[in-house]
Image (cartoon, rainbow, N blue to C red):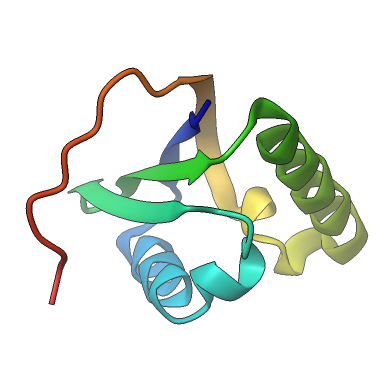
Length: 103
């Protein structure tokens, strides 16, 4: 069963949000090679939604644990330490339709 992890991320500034956006574009697939899909949606100048899909709940949890440990180890250089607020939701994907890919 495919599982979605959705993060609502608020940044301290538009500059930090821009840096995060660029970093996800360039490195997201390397950070989370287990993800079937990584989608970043910019909702305001200082906020984004990050959607990742995983094959199973176990894979999603393993990735979350790995990234949390990395964040603790890397301190201020970690993105998790540059959010002013973050909400995470996790649940099974019940329907998905993708008409086209981004170019």
